[in-house]
Length: 255
Image (tube, rainbow, N blue to C red; front, side, top):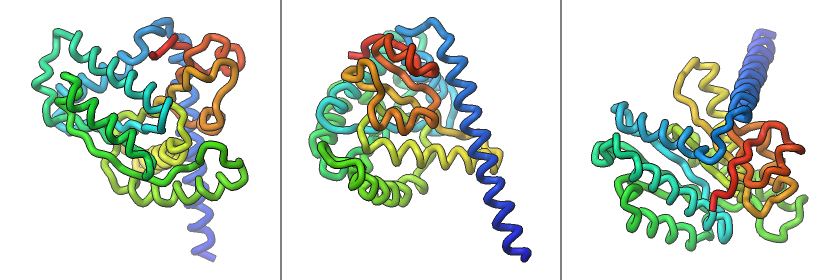
């Protein structure tokens, strides 16, 4: 009897904490969607991240999900804009960021192309070269052309492997993804971590930013529809999206 009550109480606390986390996300996105600073969207998150790297002694971590093909190309352009923001900010000493920031790339286990792109970005970009980086490989959630039914099982498998690899790593300050199926289990895991942090009353949480692909003009991708309620910022690149989805932010072209 006592064990049953403890189980019910634990389940209630988890559900309540998840509800509070989702409500916090909704409130945050509603406030951000009223902002008029669309063209400088990356400064609101990236510059805050840079400042925390320079001011705080704790090592900061930026987690980036790389898909494949077009998803990777878009994300590389976004990260280059991040590096240019750092270089254009004359008030900060980039040297002070060395060895204080880390970029963690999440890639599909079969995607060697994205790993090579990330390595090339850090070797050639003047600002990002100051950041250490590492890659974590997880199974794909869904392959191109795979049916929705069979993708359910591959997503579950990817989620289990991702849990094993991500739940024990350091909590990233910012998670950025732009729609590949690989990002679905990663975002859910970070949401679960935030739920448990709410229960433990810890302040360290991951801010999740979802950037919808430029190819999505009038409707969200499958990944976007799944993750729409669970991310702190949902950025789109076409204005028509705002009429259909009230909590998105139109930021113009990222490329």
